[in-house]
Image (cartoon, rainbow, N blue to C red; front, side, top):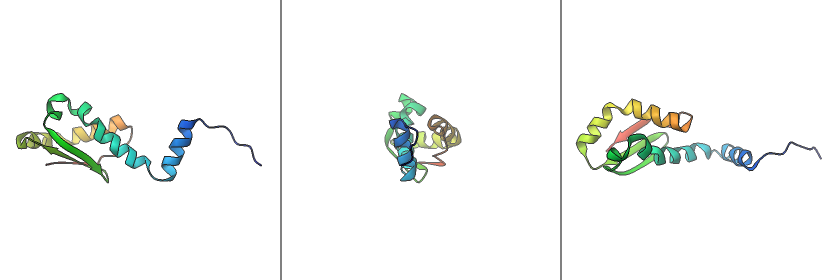
Length: 96
């Protein structure tokens, strides 16, 4: 039997997530959880719900005027979320 180097539990979990293609889904969930931290309490107060599917974050807001304002800074928000994640997961944000 061939002896291999020991791995720590974090490496084993990361390898398993990548093997089963669950790492992207986990990062999408993290992106959704980062929303309050990225936009702050003032904007998050108007967030009704948010979710990410296939790299598209959909954010439901209770203020139409805020949604229009956030549309103008969409590229900046995408960049800040991806920077916080450490890789490009979000490629589009839709405000409703």
